[in-house]
Length: 360
Image (cartoon, rainbow, N blue to C red):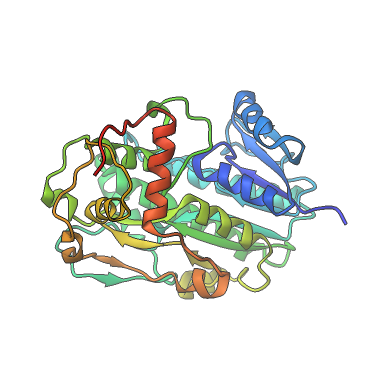
């Protein structure tokens, strides 16, 4: 029997390179979409004859994925922009939404073997960005950050970049569920969406220097360098939620063949979160990270802020979530905070981006 063939979009990205690796480790053949041959050749050198690539320069273009989806058994759509220096909301919203619609349309027309589509959504599509001091609120897969869409529509070019990102993820995921709901009688595949928070961990994608790092990895590097400088008060401010990139990759690969979590009922997704899975390891503040590394007697950069040991226990986290579905139904076992940040630190050190001059 031939191995499963899985299409992974945006295959050269931080998360996607690990998703490629995880799928190949399971014996699957992977086809990846990349924007240029250099990115594809880098991955081909990593994975050899278990990997092939196709060029998709503009994922929002009609028919962009028509060739890519042919003769694959599953599709993992990770491609989506994420950066802070947004001048126009459509810089993020346009590619996110149009890319999702484009690949769904291509699968409908040409993906005759596809049985499962896995979409990388975001925790931001479920839980709104809350201001410090907000009453702690619990969220689950039935929740949607619809307020972000309304805020961006109202504020336009003055919208905060995080609100724009949040709106882009809401609109892209809803476009996917709308498409599946509209065409459920025409398609042989169902959908699972994975809601990721900040993704941290070692990198295997092509990143020759810190300037080329993805947004979430840059956050970790900046913390280790204490750039900009953080006070003890800054360190105990809620920093959000995170998941290890390797755990997120495992979840994407596991979702490809999970027998029961897929969904075609858009209304059930919108109202009850059916088919949605949150991948949140834990809520944290940067003091927690400093303590985890130091408590594990890991040598850290002199530049890394130490703060007040244990002060993170007093932090009030305002967006609360337990990834029950990921743990109990998907079977995901999250890595510890210590492992995630220790491995990231070691990776940055090996790349020459961090120097360890002193012990703790």
